[in-house]
Amino acid sequence: MGIYIYIKFDLITSVSLICKKNYTTSVNKRLTKGERSKFSIDNPLSEILIGLLLGDGHLQCRFGNSRFIYGQSSLREHHLNYFYHIFDLFKPFVSKEFKAKSRSFVDKRTKNTYSSIYFATLTLPCFTYYRNLFYNIHNKKIVPLNINQLLTPRGLAYWIMDDGSLQNKGLHLSTYNFSYEEVILLKNTLENLFKPDFLVKCSIHNHKKGYRIYIWEESIISVRNHIFQYMHKDMLYKINPK
Image 1 (tube, rainbow, N blue to C red):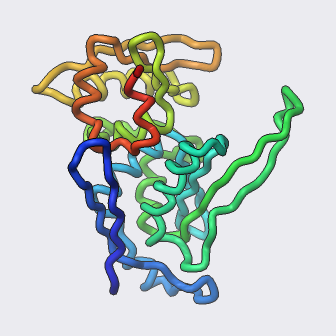
Image 2: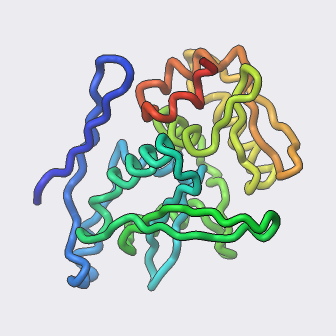
């Protein structure tokens, strides 16, 4: 098999390489059960997937296995650049001829029409493993009980790029769709993520949409220094007030 390589240039001189096997296949060719079983999600992509599933990523169960779906509702240039960065990371898991798809939808509240773009991978056993972690029997996304063993600094970077927003001199993580108990679990995981280097100071805010995590101002610089290398250049504004 060939090798698929994604090259990311950040704002400093270092270059980060993410190498993956090239599993891409013709859309006209139906994969056998054996061929599907050969797909695997290795580090660092598995770390990235954890962060995306805490954010905007979804896993859909189909025909006994699962596929990863990721979309972007903002079509501003820097958001589109980030979307295609995610698409590139998962290209080894989509059909060779697959193109990102766009669609329009009407906001029932405002009656405004919006556009979005998304992609979906092949339905594969390797994604089913993550679906079993992140979804309950009612098909609702949940926080895995062992999230403290799954979330890494790289995963946090992608979670922030999806759901993070600067608030004053701190940072909010939109965890609205999770229960209070799950948000507590995420808070505890964040607090201990960078130990023994430092303890992340954060709290839970009760917003009208649900519960969200707030990383305090005194922790932002340390968090930024630990995840900067994993951030896409167009998403750096999410951790840098300047």
